[in-house]
Image (cartoon, rainbow, N blue to C red; front, top):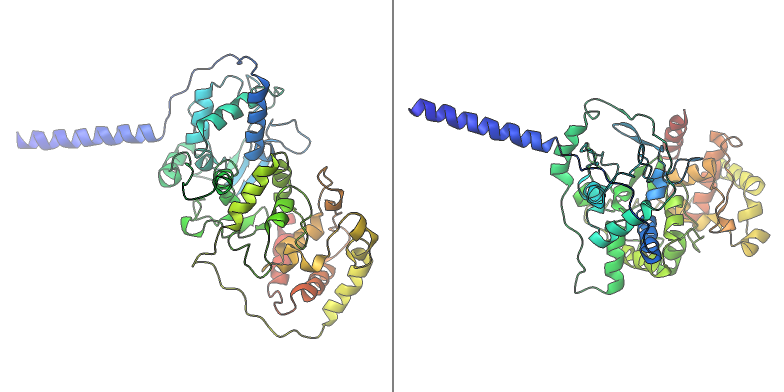
Length: 422
């Protein structure tokens, strides 16, 4: 009898374990619905703002593609993902999704048919959003033009191409409830916290990731590398060696040129253009919250300052190249400095940063023309300047802006960026 009891207990544990594993790796489908009726203008306007705050178009609109139809490749350490179609097309988009299905995807990372979404879709942050904002976002998405387009298949390495494994990732990183205002903080600070930690999912780019792609909780907002660019640390911006104030950060966040710092480029540029579509008070709230982020004990100490040396032959070459390629827009006497507020490069954040990565990328790729500010445009010089010229310009500008902190990894960073172009 005792043996039967033990066997029964083992079987019961096995059944519970199998059931738990099955539950972990499977979710039921939610029944499809017909396209919802049109909503009132106020709900659509609110939803549009939520979608802009969540940077949805940044990822779900590929270059040359239809708005929100997906197909943008996202290169990760685990392979390449292609963003999905989130227009209300019933076949290839989310036109058959109910609000319940949409909210489950936003909070749990599960599609309407029950398959797990990869956490490149930042549902770990979207779950912090309010139910009202999620509902408004759904209303707006269901109002955009439906587009019949299916993104290419993902190319994920084994075992990450087995989607149910995402369920175990969720066990580790999918936590928390919708954010509640902190009573000891101002309404502006709480609004900024909500936008940064919720729909804006800023830490997903500005925090280092662990080996399985989760944000390192002890190093949130301490900076990372994204698409070959430096997503800088957001901590200590107000009191760092090249401090920001609220007006400067608001200008940067909304696609303008920030005095003394320059403008957004690379992956941050489309984000800034989305923020520019929000009410002005939201940009100020985001800036207020970010400027309140203090450095942590895990932050790396600043590089020691070296005595300023006499200009090297490389810096002199850079000065000559700067006069020929850059001074017409950025030189001290350039008319465009006055007419279009183009910045002096020596004091921009890209030149003052600890890494030369963003300066190199900006010179190589340029900054696309946008409607936010004509002064933000810059042509790329990838086909004009070779590595020797790029390094010389970088050394010259660094000497101009931070001569006591020369970059020691310039050649290594330049080679790394060039290798990614292959």
